[in-house]
Length: 216
Figure (spheres, helix red, strand yellow):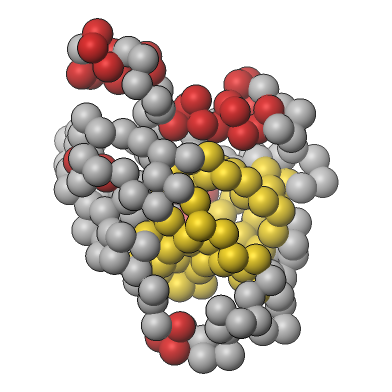
């Protein structure tokens, strides 16, 4: 487990208001209230964590990768990044990042993309899009509500030509990101089950999500 003194000695496991272990390959969701601090931890390292955010008040307002990249003038997400909605509002602010950069261009794996990229033998393997659809359905949404996502801890170098490739992750065990909620948000995660490319080191592993109240 990451040493909490690195970021905020007053935020501890004992005063966290949410503490979730998410199994390898599993979906997850929870509501983060305005002002709360969210930590997503790559517990074992080299694990892509596909993530979406929706306004908890209106699911039609959700994360926009285009607006987020345009607002920052950067292709990657890291400390200081403002997570922007399709309504142009700030949903969360990245407060800390022990890894360095995170992809928001490569999208989520799906059965269809696996088949195209890795052959017919992968057609029925579990994929992030399946996880997202299963989880948003729990909140009254459908597959139409699954939009391009953030891939925390996924290493996707972008060449000057615009070409990009998923390569070995750079995150170490216990690496984390922390985001401050600027509105009430629904967090939806697919703990990526991909085993055909190196985004998970070919070995999907569990992760951890913690939340602290604004006064902590």
